[in-house]
Length: 133
Image (cartoon, rainbow, N blue to C red; front, side):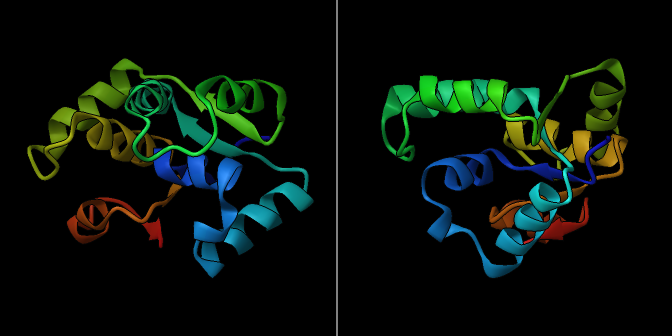
């Protein structure tokens, strides 16, 4: 089964370590995906961001290894690779987003026609992709 939604890195972390920080709508979407036996997408760049956040210990509750184990073991997650199509989409978007990881995540959502679960105001305000706040 293919995912209908892509999770921003912070949504992945919140869902796995502190789900109370998710919005009501994000919880509903994630619960529905799991209960229906579906899956959600996670951009490969999120793995890199998890490493950086865990090293900084600033905004990550669970440890990096616990998060990676869950991403590997839980069938609800599909890691979506960075491909040349995603890179082309990043180039086509121009400089609307400065953060390279945000650009990869948004381009991944656009290429795969996925709604993005995010709380990132820059992404939301960019109107580059359909979001669930």
